[in-house]
Image 1 (cartoon, rainbow, N blue to C red):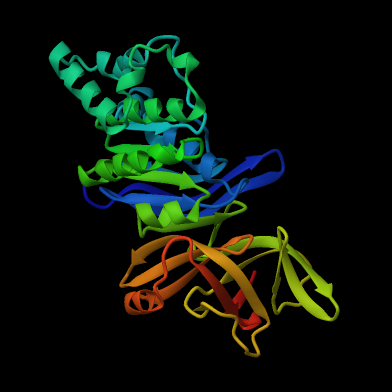
Image 2: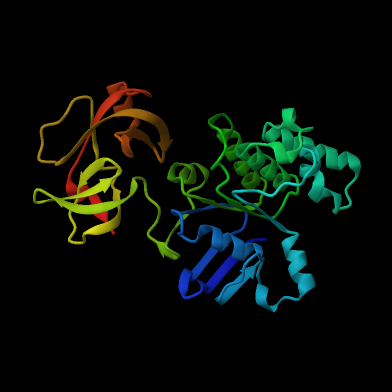
Length: 336
C-alpha cells in the first residue's frame, strides 16, 4: 500500500499518574525504514508495544494499514497482526532447536515443506546461524537469541516489522549482518520501525529518524547528543558528561541534554590557539561518508562526531587510530 502504514493522532499512554507517551501526531510511511531514537524511558518500547497490539493507548487514535484499530472486530485485529511482527530486545524463544524456532511461524501458513525449508535457509544464511541450527534455543547467548528472533521475523515476509534495540546484545562481528538484514527488509518493501538508543546506528539504517524524549516528540535526532549535569566551575558554566567537562552557555543548572554542531567543530593534528574554550585531544575511531561529507568519530573520553570534506580528510591523512584535536566554542553547544 502507499501512504502511512501507521498513523497516530492524539495518542497518550499513562501508567498510574505518569504520562509515558504524549504524541499529538506521528506517521510511518509504507515501504520505508523508520528509526526511533531516545534514551531509556523515552517511550520507544511503549510505542512499539502499542503498535503491535500488546499495550493499549490511554487516549487517542491508532490506525494500521489505513484502518482505526479501535473500530476493528477481534477477527479483523487478528488479521492485521498476521501482517506484522515484533522482535523484542529480550526475545522469547521456544524450548526447541533454533531451526524449529525459525520455522515456527511458517507452520500455520500452509506452506509446503520445501517452501518452509527455503525460507528458513535464507534467514539462516542472512544472519549467520548455520552452526546453531541444532542447538536448543534456550541455551543461546543474548546476541545469538536476537539474531534467531530476527531470522524468525524475516522468514514471514511481513508487511510491518517492529524491532526493539535489535543490536543491543549482538557482538561486533555480527552487527553488520543484522543491519544488512534490516536493510533487506526495507529493500523488499516491508515497513520497518526500529527503536534504538544508538545514534550512529539510526543514521546508518535510515534518514527517517524520529527522536523521543520522555514520551514527547523532540527536535530531529542529531550527532553529538549529550546528557549531563550543568554546574558552575570557577565562574564558568560547564556540562559534566561522564568525566568530560564541556563549557556551555545556559542559565539552567542541573541535569540537561545538549548537542554539539558537528559542522563547526575544528579538527586538527595539533592544538589550536584560539578563543574557543573547548579543546580536547582524542583518537579517531570511525569514519563514514554522509551527504557528501565525512563524519569523523573521535573518542575524547566521550564520542564526538566532526563533519569534514573528503578532500580535507585526504589532505590531513586521517585514518582510524589517528591522534587529533577538537576545538569548538561554547556557542556551538545547544542546551535544552
